[in-house]
Length: 236
Image (tube, helix red, strand yellow):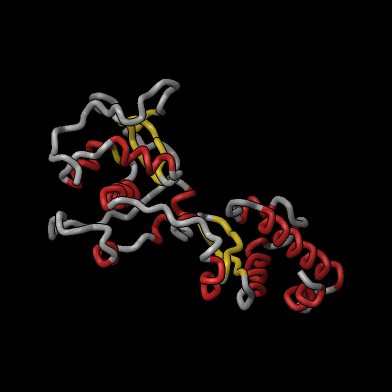
């Protein structure tokens, strides 16, 4: 950060020492975010700045400073990270990793997990009306977008699935409740005509804590050996 930039964002009428501390706090937050490979939360950043500084104010100033630049500070996955300015993304297209292509089935399953978590494979199949191939869930697990949460307290103790911070980061979401509603999902082709007219989209919740009807996974488990999957049509 240039000295003039620090002066611009720190100069708000604070006397010398406070102004210096604020400027140093900006530099610390900038350095941590620049060096991090993942979004950093406000509480995590606050532990490294001088005592008494308001981390939210620091982040707001840093966001404003980078708003007109080639990289922006954005809120994503419950934290903050530098990202290429949206209007300049085309410049990096040739260098970027090609996006992971998901089948229609994988997109549907990912959507169901995101909105209905914690959810078992049998519950996913009940919503979709078709069987879920083992490989489809494996792809989502390997991508780091879906995780194994626990086991349902029901016959067979089926594994429950939920989304990860990596899911939020990949899709540019700050929180899980930033997900689009039913109409947006239909418009994007993620959810198609199988769903009933009276279906509603639940309020998504990715709280990492286990629910009252979930037990820990335990040391030994078979991820997709739910034991309660009912017969369905083959996955399409």
